[in-house]
Length: 179
Image 1: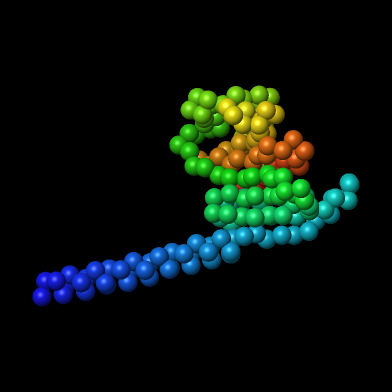
Image 2 (image 1 turned 90 degrees about the vertical axis):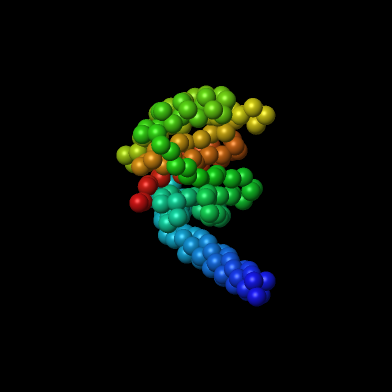
């Protein structure tokens, strides 16, 4: 009798586990699909370039993206790829630091990165830092990165493609936190 009860319990546990896995997968797929993005075409009157406004409900931000970029939102980051498949990547990490300076000092020490051309920025009321980051073994020119602090979150907006540096600047300057 104990063996039969044990087999029934195991089977029931496996069925429940399977249901939770299916529901979890469905929830993650739906969450990403529903938060993918909302786009709105805008015309910039000064140079007639078109930009798309992208809103990430999952990562809680909006940005203006040049029209030649394809947008792909994943669970923890957004990839913006141009026609040459070069990318700007936006991600978000949580922090216990109360400001961007303390966060960056800690990051530099822990990751042993070289920071060049460090400039403090204010983007739509949020404190941030723009810099060229050189990782050991990384690209020689480095990676241009904006770090933007908001409510114990640090947003990274970066590219290692020098040809996208000016697009990166425009994208980062349009960043808005949307809680």
